[in-house]
Length: 296
Image 1 (tube, one colour):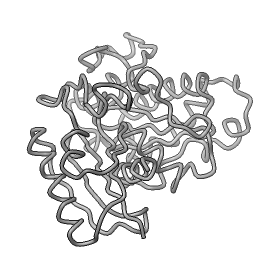
Image 2: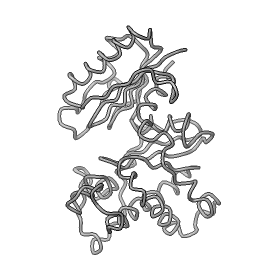
Image 3: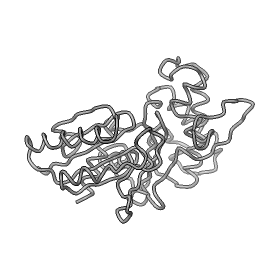
C-alpha cells in the first residue's frame, strides 16, 4: 500500500504521522513547537526513521498554522509569513524538509488541510461546498468551493472578519494584536480567558461566557452563510469541545439569519448543518496526509 507522510504544524505542537488514511496510521509522534530549526529537524528525523522501518513514502503533506504562502509559483512558497508567534515569522517550512527527504510536498493551512480531510473521510463526505472552522487558541477557516480548496490572493483568514460589537453589553476591547475586536479577538480561547479571567475549560456550562461566545460565532456564521453559501459548517477546535455551545450556536444562527436564507438545511435541519468534525482531533494530521495525496 502507498504510504504518505503528514505534518500538522501547530503553533503549540507538531504532530507527524505516516499512513494512508484514518484506518491506516502506521506511526505517529508529537512534540512541542519550539524554535524553527529544532522543530523542523525533529520532523525530518521522524520521517527518516519511519522510512527505514516502513519503506519509502510517496509524498509528505504539511498543514501549518499561518498565515502562510501556499502558492507554488511564489518565491516564498512553503513559508509561514506574518505570524505573531515569536521566532517563526518568514520561516521556510517546505524547503528544509524537501531538501533532506527529496519528496513531493503538499502545503497549505492547517484549517484547509482539516477541511480536505473532513471532505475525504469525515463530516463533509459527498459535499462540494462546505466550511471547516477551528475555534481554539486562534480562529481559522478552510473553505471547499465546488470541490476545490479556496485560495485566491493567499488563503481565507476567516478569524479576522469584523463583527458587530455592542460596547455597552460587552466592553471587552478584543484581543487581536492586528484588529482588536475581530472574530478571533472576541471569541478565541485567549479572548475568553482575558475577558473572564479564567480559561474556558474552567467555566461552568451555565456561565454567561457561553451565551456571549455563541453570539459571536453566530454573527460570523451569518456572514459566511450569506457570502459562501456552504452546504455544511463544521466547527472544531478546543473551544467547541464545550458541549453546550453547539445548541446555542445553532439557535443563535437561525435567529440572526431571521428566515432570510430559505433552505431546509437551516430552517429544519440545523442539527445536521452545523456539526462537529467527524475526525475529531485527528482532522489536522489526517488533513496533512490528504495534502500529501493531492501532491502526486
